[in-house]
Length: 252
Image (tube, one colour):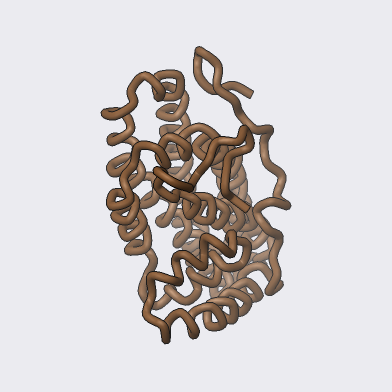
């Protein structure tokens, strides 16, 4: 469950905005980007069809991550800086530095992806797999810091309306033809209570149909990309040690 952070701070409840969906989204990034290097390395050199298939997957998640960080900065981070600057002071330098690192690796990943998509060579595939591994290492560290230190502040100081706008803009980045798949990805390891709250906002027929359709879409997609309908979960992937805040910022 995702009711609170590791140090016991609540992410929902009376007087708080329920921000638990952020953890569900983060888990999708951790899992799908974390598993991508293996999918790339498992592609036979010269197999253009398989290369395009895996490249589309990687490109989708690189684009979703870029959009996620952009709206996070615009809608959440800016509001927190205005409302609770003193509470954010220990975090500002580290969080901005992490965002810059992730942004730089995103740019490198997209360039390497374009090259591999064109050549389908093992050398270019390995170059992409390596930069994606670097991206995942930096990303996991950043997401853990966000979940530990920023989500509790968001629950306290971001309004329900602002959170709804952030969620809506996040969903808008998912191609319409992939909406069922996107929901299936969230269902795969998302907190059932959080997913249930999202479903409650949908019309009754959609509430009934979306879960089985989503699960089926994800199993089919995961078999195609990862070779199994039950890929490794984000919690099973190797991750850096959790970070904590000091007076100088975040440290390990």
